[in-house]
Image: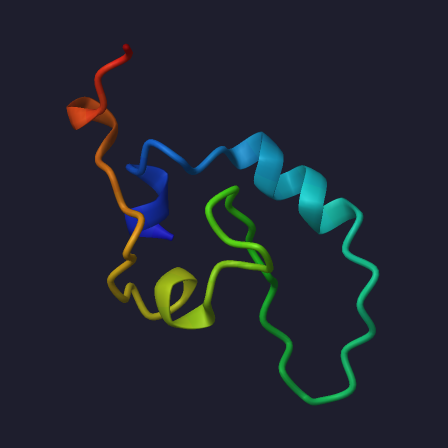
Length: 67
């Protein structure tokens, strides 16, 4: 989540809201918590949120300029 915390698109309140209303039943042994971003239709891939992988949508907060 280090990459997400510094991303323009990531919003912690949005992430927590989606986690509260995630009603998918997990049938496998994967206990990792899903994290959410408006840029993904489903959850943020585990490779990004848990393994600090690269994100195609990453935009550093400081570099984003309002129009």
